[in-house]
Image 1 (tube, rainbow over the protein chains, first blue to last red):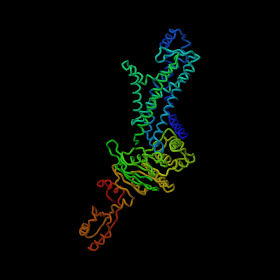
Image 2 (image 1 turned 30 degrees about the vertical axis):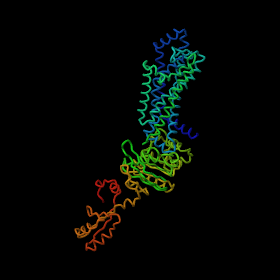
Image 3 (image 1 turned 45 degrees about the vertical axis):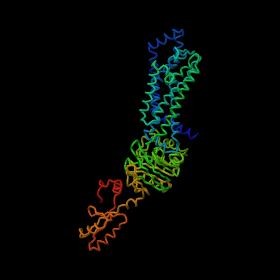
Image 4 (image 1 turned 135 degrees about the vertical axis):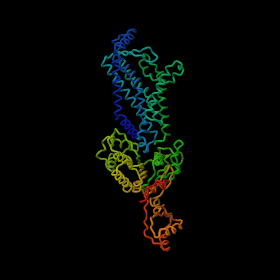
Length: 279
Length: 302
């Protein structure tokens, strides 16, 4: 077990020693600041004001740092997050195979299953680290700009949700691992394609294609009956935590689907990698 | 140490290796010779369990690589033609990463390997600034950790300058003679293989066309240049002996078992003056090309 942990630590060393990792983090920071700027332009601001006040709440209280942080989080993870996770996960196995380091590793008495599990865990860890980074920087940026207050947001299957100031930080912090867990599915799909005999860029593109195709199809009314099977139908489950009455059953169902998909990706990816010739 | 039993591999419809059977005893330096695409790297891949054979099996110390890969690869080190590293990390971190996939290795053991390959001064530099020779040496260091008894070297001298080749040769000989390691080496540099290996196998288009030691190989065709007077009568005597084949420039090729002394005696007995009998050393390239059936393209014998 301790050797496994050492190997896992080195997987993280490999991942977090690359400059590209930090370039990605910097890109997210810039994106967050851009979104913060855009949200405070007169038109979006007026729209928020209209909705909040229309429902009888105070704009100054609910257009807070938390509300801005939540908007930043949603836009950043949806726009750039999927792209970046697909890039990193698509690289995981395929890049090492392409560069030849995988052959060097597999000269050693280590099973391919162990290598895939280590890589997968590294991908999930990276996902959690990235989401934590985005969440915390978004929160800091939001609070710095608008200060504390309540949270106004629109979770899926609800018109909007308002969280009073005294509950909002706890829920926000709880939402971070839930968001990371749902985004780990994108990493898992990237990992699956990375195990196949394809170039890293191809694995990333295929992953993104799957996610976007799923997104488009899940929005088409014709496929309404198939909605529970679409990935995007479950990716927003983390936001349910902000509902006045949290639909725990629905959330459990959503996360069971996502975690089930993650495990399937790991198993299928490992099985594919086991059968591959490394040359 | 290594036993290959009718090992075969086909990639799609392209056969890469045809039923290769080979035994490499412990303590030898064994050379696998062949041009690019001959099947050397595929053979290495199957010995290391990285390429799945279409049929046949590879055994290391009697353990099947295909069935018990982890057990079979205990005590095996390997380097490839183009060693790959995490270029953004130091040589030292790379060594720690790779060795962690075998077992935990003491720092002293790591230092010893680094010292053996002469990388002490640069081991903390990022690998991206290493020269090709330094990368090869780092690859050798990682192959030696932790202390293998079998080392597989795929084209270890590839891309090295003459000094680097010389150093690598000494390192490999040191591994075998000082540390008792069995070495399986692949190369298309014939002179390198000749200087290092005890025994060789020659692969051509996935088939083994020779296996033995150098004397077996060079002894397959013994050649002489002969000069006698009168030459037309000497030619008649030579032509009457089926074990001799007279070529251009008075070059004689003797069939295995034939003795040049018998011919000299026959010429003298016929009253022919033998002026010179000069043994011709066949160049390694010539022998190799002869083996792989490209004799016609071989350079003239000097």
